Length: 77
Image 1 (cartoon, one colour):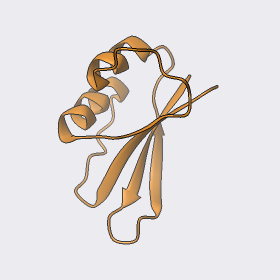
Image 2 (cartoon, rainbow, N blue to C red):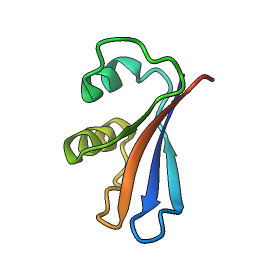
Image 3 (cartoon, one colour):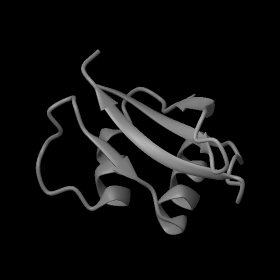
Image 4 (cartoon, one colour):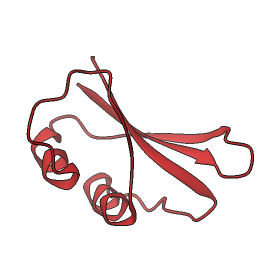
């Protein structure tokens, strides 16, 4: 499974950037997202501030910004 955080501009809703999550992060991501079942590979989730902060720790990158709406996508690799 490939997990990507997408950042969309709040003004025009265009995709501003993407951040790929590291391979092998499924267990940590399931805890962050509070998932109780495996992902199918076609899901998308809006991220709240707590989830986004935890994903920043997981990726070791700081990208949270009030200018953007953040979503997590799950894709079959």
